[in-house]
Amino acid sequence: MSQRARYIMIGGFLGAGKTTTVGRLARHLSDQGLKVGLITNDQAGGLVDTKLLRGQGYATEEIAGGCFCCRFNTLVDAASKLTTRTKPDVFIAEPVGSCTDLVATVTYPLRRMYGDAFTIAPLSVLVDPIRARRVFGLDDGGTFSSKVAYIFKKQLEEADIIVISKSDLIDETQREELRAVLTKEFPLAKVVTASPRQETGLDELFASLMTDEQARRNPMAVDYEVYADGEALLGWLNATVTLKSDDEFDANDFLKKLATHVQGRLQLAGVEIAHFKMTFSPDDGIAGELASINLVRSDYVAELGMELDEPSTGGQLIVNLRAEADPASLMEAVKAGVEATASQFFGLKATLDHEEHFRPGKPTPTHRDA
Image 1: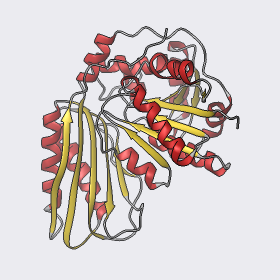
Image 2 (image 1 turned 90 degrees about the horizontal axis):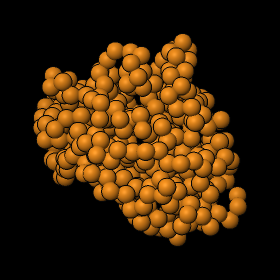
Image 3 (image 1 turned 135 degrees about the horizontal axis):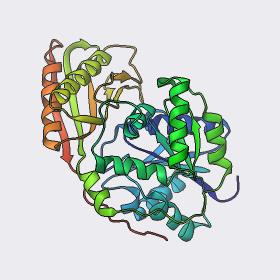
Image 4 (image 1 turned 60 degrees about the vertical axis):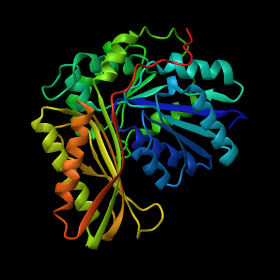
């Protein structure tokens, strides 16, 4: 490594597999003897992503209250904190899944003002293949309204590398069909396929992120009114819940039942889920031990990511839910789901400690370099 640290940003829409990929890349670099610092980002605090990455043992700073573009100085401060504490060789930043225009508002200003401290990797943008096939009209199924889809497509337009993530979910014919569409729509980007969960196709991506430089080209045009309208259509919910039981209960089963209950209520309301994820950290477990579950579409099946080996008597549940819906309706669905699910476990009590539900405000970048 040179004296300058490497700055890598891995973007993509909600539910594209960013956190899994960030974790895989961090482990890959750590195995090579490099120090890694992670920066997560959200419109609100209390991120499942932060919990998951810290649980894997990585130094992680969380930036809440807006996208990297609107919190640029906080992003630099977070990098400084990591440098003071762990002196990373590589910073990996995961932006908000509804954020775009990252090149003009984050990486170009970073290179201009802090080019003596960082080398900037190509911007990689992950895309869920099933979601993408629906957005581009290749398949039927639940999708977003046009203004939300505008953000989805703009993320891909500014990418140096488009990663068809979760490539194991579709067959070879479907992958090639999607690759052809992405190559035609976004000719400046390199299109690769990978499955972070199965750890296939990642070597080429990781090599590019560590050796290539971000392309120098004019930033894309962005209609910030449409962008703001698209973000405002998305409901955002973060909540923490304390679970306490008179007897041991299966937290993995609790997460599955809760996810299914909330999903069912939202399906009945015609809501399209962008990303629904939860973690449970047991009070009686080993430090860093947790269970996690993930749902990325309304018509999909919630999947356990990490599981607990033993029953628990209590702990902290973190809930992150993003969907194209009124935020209050998301809160109602989660509250009803927690109450109904807890009642299925003898002696289990659920206490809502904290919640935020809102629509993101209009993005106002700190900098925007032409």
